[in-house]
Image (spheres, one colour):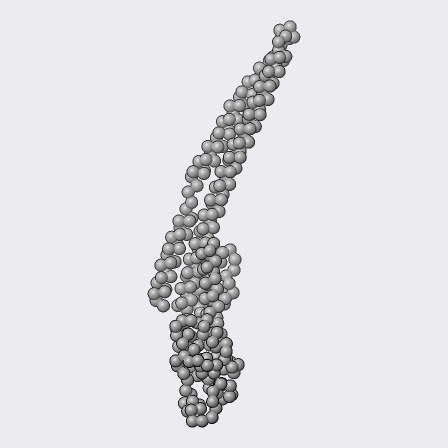
Length: 284
């Protein structure tokens, strides 16, 4: 277990470095593009605006000329008006192009910022899940890690994890407690005649007298056989297999193990919830 915790600590440190890297996004190139485009638009508008103003002034001067002096003014005015219209159209075209490019640059910058924020949230979520998994191994409280997880996800943590935020029974605890509960379950099953064993003969007498229980896994549907396989799975850390085996016990035997089963199921549910979160955060 110590090796697993050390590996998870290393994973957490790596994820924290990812969070720091994701939080520093270089937008200088896009910002420079935005600034240049804005300056180009302003410069173009100023230059063409000056030209239009000059032509407008000249056209007005022509219009003020007396008819005798400005016999050729009307054709000139028409020419200036055509030139003005062309310049106005050019201003509009260039402004539209620059505005489109500016909006595109802004959209790209917003997308980069959002991607960086999403990456940072995902890295923070993975770091929180790694801390949760470490706490599940050691039985430590999950409260702080759950808070960080909710901040990263923007939603509540799974109920299975909230239920054990003060700590979950460790695998070692469950392994240590199992024999006592198994003996009680087997004794009750035998006394109720539902153990699936022979109830007569010297072998049955010895089993009942000395509370004999199999400690090596064996085949069969009897209570002793089920408990032997469940304990073997538990010793190798396969808690889900243990719970699957114990589901086949007679009801009276399960009732004797109800406290242990509640703790084991709480641990199994919390681990499953953490694994699902870890997978979803990696996929995203």
